[in-house]
Image 1: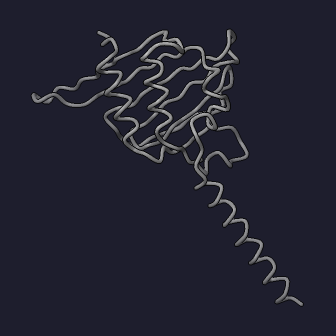
Image 2: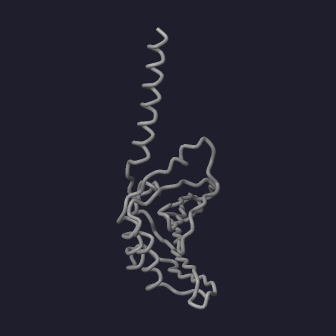
Image 3: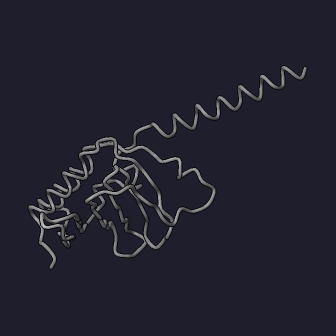
Length: 172
């Protein structure tokens, strides 16, 4: 009888682990991670940050931005298209029983921030940060809770940064 219970517990544990990996590896669309159909987004703003060392060894941080883009503009459509080009996988951090309020990322020379709005109140907004290691951090409205995803296509950040760099305004 004891060996039967032990086998059942091992099988249950294996099933839980299998379900967690299936959950983690299941791809999600951009609309899935922001919990809103992209056609309802009415405006966005995007910044790209690039940092590094100049040839003479001095450090630099360059910031570029595209502000107040509306859903009928070419820049808005281009940013949404870039975000839609990849799928996203959940991070195991999202399974933690407590709220995630900070996220670290391995060293990278660039990141992008995207602020989306689909209404006229703070609760109808979403903020995304895309890190160089493929990590995408999402927060909603007035909440301080963060959700972590991993972009399947790691070139998405480079495409975002290049687009904002070429079409945006450089901050001084």
